[in-house]
Length: 431
Image (spheres, rainbow, N blue to C red):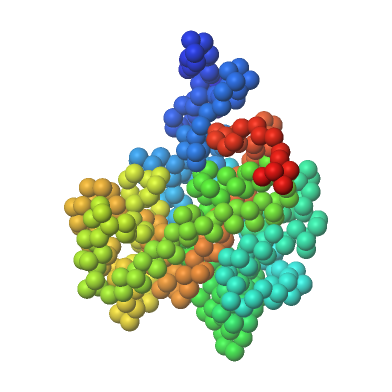
C-alpha cells in the first residue's frame, strides 16, 4: 500500500477535513478514514461493508469487471490447469510457488497429518445420525482445539505452523467422516499413498468389503474444485475468520467460525441451491417455462447458478469448471440422470439466449461444481462441506496474514443507532 500526495476533502457543516488516499498495487484507490471519528465526530455508514476495505492483504485479488481472479498474482485459470491443490496451498500460505524440495516437504507434512485423534471418532458419534454434514464439520473443526492443545498458542510461530498443517490435512478426513456418518457408511482412514484429492474421494466412497480405485478424471475434477475455491478475497466467511481472529481466539475456533458463515445459502450454499433448482425443474421439457419465469420481472423466481455478485463478466472459475464438468459427464454419462440432463440443456439455453447473454448471466462456478458433485454421487448436503475443505487454506492464509499485521486491532464495527433515547425505569406496578 502506497500513500500518495493526494487527499480527499470532506466538508461537514462548513468545516473541511483532509483524508489521505492510499494506492494499492492494483485496483481502486482507498480513502483512509481511520481518524474520521477522532477528527470529525462522525462515523461512516456502509451496511455490508461493500465500500469499505477492512484490511490490507497481499493474497487474492478480484477484478469483477474483467472477470479476473489472482492468487498471489497468478491467474486462477493457469493454476487450475497447470498446478494442483497442495501447490496452490503453499502459494497462498507463503506467497511464492514452491520449488521441488519445498513442495515435497510440504506435501509430506500434510499427508502425514491427515489422521484424526482416535477419540474424535467417539465425539463425532455423539451427533444425531440425521445431523447435517455441515453441522458436524463445524463442530468437529472447533473441537480440534480440545484434542490438539499443542497448537493453540497464537503467539508461538511454531504452533501456528503446526495448526496450519493440521487443518489443511484433517479437513478432508473430517468432511469425509461427516459424509460416512450421515449416510451410514463405515469410517475410512486416510491412505498416505494417494494424492490429496484421491484420498478424499476414497475416504468418501470406499468400503472395507472391496478395493476402491479412484478414477483419475474424478480426482482431477475434485482437485480443480478445491483449487478454484481456495480463496476469494474478503468475502463473508473470510471476514468472519479475520474478525474472530482479531480477538486472539485460537486458529481452530477461527476456522470453525468461517465454516459457520460459509454454511449460509447466500454464501457457500449457492451450489446446493443450484442443484435444488434443477430438481425443481425436473425435466428438460420444463426448461422453457422456468426460463420465461426468470425473464419475468413480476416473478420472484430466478435461476440459481447464473451470474455473480462480484463478477460482472464471465466468472473465470466457471471456464475451468466447465471443462471438468464436460469430462466428468462424458465419463459418468447423463442419460440416466434427469438432473444432469436438465443442467446440460439449461447451460445450452443460457449461453445462446440473447436475454442471458446481454445481461451476462453466464453459468457460474456454483452451477458447474454442483453438476460435477451430483454426477460423482455426492448429496447436496455435502456440497458446502466440500467447499469448506477447499477454502480452509484461504481462511488460514488470511488469518496468518492478519496475525502478522502490526496494525492489527480487534474488530469493532460502529452502528447507526435508531432505537429509543434515554428513558427512566418504572416499577412494574406503574407500567
